[in-house]
Amino acid sequence: MKFVALSASLILPTVIAFVACAPVGADDARLEESRALVQAFGARLKGELKKGLEQGGPVAAVNICKDVAPQIASELSRQSGARVMRVSLRYRNPGNAPDDWQVRVLEDFESRAAVAEKPAPLEHFVTAEDGRDRYMSAIRIDGVCLACHGETLAPPLQERLDAEYPHDKAIGYRLGDVRGAFSVSWPAADPPGS
Picture (cartoon, rainbow, N blue to C red):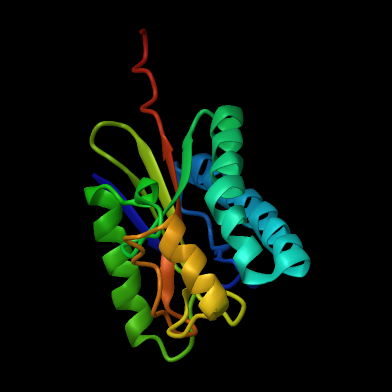
Protein backbone atom coordinates (compact mmCIF):
# COMPACT_ATOMS: atom_id res chain seq x y z
CA MET A 1 0.00 0.00 0.00
CA LYS A 2 1.40 3.41 -0.98
CA PHE A 3 0.87 5.99 1.74
CA VAL A 4 1.29 9.73 1.91
CA ALA A 5 0.35 11.76 5.02
CA LEU A 6 0.32 15.47 4.35
CA SER A 7 0.16 18.59 6.48
CA ALA A 8 0.70 22.21 5.41
CA SER A 9 -0.71 25.70 5.30
CA LEU A 10 -4.06 26.73 3.75
CA ILE A 11 -7.10 26.77 6.05
CA LEU A 12 -10.54 27.67 4.75
CA PRO A 13 -12.07 29.53 7.70
CA THR A 14 -15.24 28.42 9.47
CA VAL A 15 -15.90 25.08 7.85
CA ILE A 16 -12.84 23.14 6.76
CA ALA A 17 -9.20 22.66 7.31
CA PHE A 18 -7.68 22.23 3.86
CA VAL A 19 -4.05 21.83 2.90
CA ALA A 20 -1.86 22.84 -0.01
CA CYS A 21 1.51 21.11 -0.03
CA ALA A 22 4.47 20.15 -2.14
CA PRO A 23 4.14 17.63 -4.97
CA VAL A 24 4.14 13.98 -3.96
CA GLY A 25 4.89 12.20 -7.22
CA ALA A 26 2.70 9.95 -9.34
CA ASP A 27 -0.42 10.57 -7.26
CA ASP A 28 -0.34 14.34 -7.84
CA ALA A 29 -3.25 14.51 -10.27
CA ARG A 30 -5.64 12.43 -8.15
CA LEU A 31 -4.52 14.20 -4.99
CA GLU A 32 -5.14 17.60 -6.57
CA GLU A 33 -8.55 16.46 -7.87
CA SER A 34 -9.42 15.31 -4.35
CA ARG A 35 -8.32 18.59 -2.84
CA ALA A 36 -10.37 20.52 -5.41
CA LEU A 37 -13.48 18.48 -4.58
CA VAL A 38 -13.01 19.09 -0.87
CA GLN A 39 -12.43 22.79 -1.43
CA ALA A 40 -15.59 23.01 -3.56
CA PHE A 41 -17.60 21.07 -0.97
CA GLY A 42 -16.32 23.21 1.90
CA ALA A 43 -16.85 26.51 0.10
CA ARG A 44 -20.40 25.65 -0.95
CA LEU A 45 -21.31 24.28 2.47
CA LYS A 46 -19.83 27.35 4.17
CA GLY A 47 -21.90 29.65 1.95
CA GLU A 48 -25.09 27.71 2.63
CA LEU A 49 -24.42 27.61 6.39
CA LYS A 50 -23.75 31.35 6.42
CA LYS A 51 -27.09 32.01 4.68
CA GLY A 52 -28.92 29.64 7.02
CA LEU A 53 -27.41 31.21 10.12
CA GLU A 54 -28.26 34.71 8.88
CA GLN A 55 -31.84 33.75 8.02
CA GLY A 56 -32.77 31.64 11.03
CA GLY A 57 -29.84 31.07 13.35
CA PRO A 58 -28.50 27.68 14.44
CA VAL A 59 -31.93 26.01 14.37
CA ALA A 60 -32.23 26.81 10.65
CA ALA A 61 -28.65 25.71 10.03
CA VAL A 62 -29.60 22.17 11.10
CA ASN A 63 -31.46 21.83 7.78
CA ILE A 64 -28.34 22.84 5.88
CA CYS A 65 -26.27 20.01 7.33
CA LYS A 66 -29.20 17.58 7.19
CA ASP A 67 -30.45 18.29 3.67
CA VAL A 68 -28.11 20.54 1.70
CA ALA A 69 -24.72 19.00 2.61
CA PRO A 70 -25.73 15.54 1.31
CA GLN A 71 -27.03 17.16 -1.88
CA ILE A 72 -23.70 18.92 -2.41
CA ALA A 73 -21.84 15.65 -1.79
CA SER A 74 -24.09 13.78 -4.21
CA GLU A 75 -23.67 16.40 -6.92
CA LEU A 76 -19.88 16.44 -6.56
CA SER A 77 -19.83 12.63 -6.61
CA ARG A 78 -21.85 12.50 -9.84
CA GLN A 79 -19.69 15.15 -11.49
CA SER A 80 -16.36 13.60 -10.52
CA GLY A 81 -16.96 9.85 -10.45
CA ALA A 82 -15.59 9.72 -6.89
CA ARG A 83 -17.56 9.12 -3.72
CA VAL A 84 -17.56 12.44 -1.87
CA MET A 85 -18.88 12.65 1.69
CA ARG A 86 -18.41 13.88 5.24
CA VAL A 87 -17.58 11.44 8.05
CA SER A 88 -17.06 11.72 11.79
CA LEU A 89 -16.30 9.50 14.76
CA ARG A 90 -18.96 11.47 16.65
CA TYR A 91 -21.56 11.77 13.92
CA ARG A 92 -24.96 13.36 14.12
CA ASN A 93 -26.37 11.59 11.08
CA PRO A 94 -25.73 7.82 10.95
CA GLY A 95 -25.16 8.27 7.19
CA ASN A 96 -21.92 10.02 8.14
CA ALA A 97 -20.54 7.05 10.07
CA PRO A 98 -17.01 6.21 8.91
CA ASP A 99 -15.82 2.90 7.49
CA ASP A 100 -12.85 1.13 9.11
CA TRP A 101 -10.23 2.98 7.04
CA GLN A 102 -11.87 6.33 7.75
CA VAL A 103 -11.96 5.52 11.48
CA ARG A 104 -8.19 4.95 11.46
CA VAL A 105 -7.55 8.22 9.61
CA LEU A 106 -9.90 10.19 11.89
CA GLU A 107 -8.18 8.73 14.95
CA ASP A 108 -4.83 9.73 13.46
CA PHE A 109 -6.12 13.27 12.81
CA GLU A 110 -7.30 13.52 16.42
CA SER A 111 -3.95 12.28 17.74
CA ARG A 112 -2.02 14.70 15.57
CA ALA A 113 -4.31 17.60 16.52
CA ALA A 114 -3.94 16.81 20.23
CA VAL A 115 -0.17 17.32 20.17
CA ALA A 116 -0.13 20.40 17.92
CA GLU A 117 0.48 23.70 19.70
CA LYS A 118 -1.83 25.45 17.25
CA PRO A 119 -4.51 23.97 15.00
CA ALA A 120 -2.67 22.48 12.05
CA PRO A 121 -4.33 21.48 8.78
CA LEU A 122 -4.63 17.73 8.41
CA GLU A 123 -5.06 15.60 5.31
CA HIS A 124 -4.39 12.02 4.26
CA PHE A 125 -4.04 10.43 0.82
CA VAL A 126 -3.44 6.77 0.00
CA THR A 127 -3.55 4.45 -2.98
CA ALA A 128 -4.91 1.23 -1.51
CA GLU A 129 -3.84 -2.27 -2.54
CA ASP A 130 -7.10 -2.63 -4.48
CA GLY A 131 -6.13 0.41 -6.60
CA ARG A 132 -8.57 2.89 -5.09
CA ASP A 133 -7.26 6.35 -4.26
CA ARG A 134 -8.63 7.66 -0.98
CA TYR A 135 -8.33 11.12 0.49
CA MET A 136 -9.49 12.81 3.68
CA SER A 137 -9.21 16.41 4.87
CA ALA A 138 -10.04 17.24 8.49
CA ILE A 139 -12.90 19.52 9.47
CA ARG A 140 -11.87 21.58 12.49
CA ILE A 141 -14.23 23.25 14.96
CA ASP A 142 -14.17 27.03 15.01
CA GLY A 143 -16.30 29.59 16.83
CA VAL A 144 -19.30 29.39 14.50
CA CYS A 145 -19.39 25.58 14.76
CA LEU A 146 -19.71 25.73 18.54
CA ALA A 147 -23.30 27.03 18.30
CA CYS A 148 -24.43 23.58 17.06
CA HIS A 149 -21.56 21.34 18.17
CA GLY A 150 -20.27 22.92 21.40
CA GLU A 151 -20.58 21.87 25.00
CA THR A 152 -23.63 24.06 25.68
CA LEU A 153 -26.46 24.45 23.16
CA ALA A 154 -29.38 26.88 23.23
CA PRO A 155 -32.59 25.13 24.38
CA PRO A 156 -34.50 25.59 21.06
CA LEU A 157 -31.55 24.10 19.17
CA GLN A 158 -31.20 21.23 21.62
CA GLU A 159 -34.92 20.45 21.21
CA ARG A 160 -34.58 20.45 17.42
CA LEU A 161 -31.52 18.20 17.52
CA ASP A 162 -33.23 15.81 19.96
CA ALA A 163 -36.16 15.55 17.54
CA GLU A 164 -34.05 15.16 14.37
CA TYR A 165 -31.16 13.15 15.81
CA PRO A 166 -32.14 11.27 18.98
CA HIS A 167 -28.74 9.52 19.06
CA ASP A 168 -26.67 12.64 18.31
CA LYS A 169 -22.96 12.21 19.09
CA ALA A 170 -21.81 15.51 17.51
CA ILE A 171 -21.80 17.74 20.58
CA GLY A 172 -19.32 18.61 23.29
CA TYR A 173 -16.63 19.91 20.94
CA ARG A 174 -14.16 22.67 21.78
CA LEU A 175 -12.48 25.21 19.56
CA GLY A 176 -9.89 23.51 17.30
CA ASP A 177 -11.19 19.96 17.81
CA VAL A 178 -11.39 17.67 14.80
CA ARG A 179 -15.13 17.53 14.03
CA GLY A 180 -14.70 14.98 11.26
CA ALA A 181 -13.43 15.02 7.70
CA PHE A 182 -14.34 15.41 4.08
CA SER A 183 -13.70 12.06 2.39
CA VAL A 184 -13.08 11.32 -1.30
CA SER A 185 -12.82 7.77 -2.61
CA TRP A 186 -11.97 7.12 -6.25
CA PRO A 187 -12.78 3.81 -7.94
CA ALA A 188 -9.83 1.63 -8.86
CA ALA A 189 -8.44 2.38 -12.29
CA ASP A 190 -9.02 -0.29 -14.89
CA PRO A 191 -5.90 -2.41 -15.37
CA PRO A 192 -4.10 -1.86 -18.67
CA GLY A 193 -5.64 -3.80 -21.57
CA SER A 194 -9.06 -4.23 -19.97
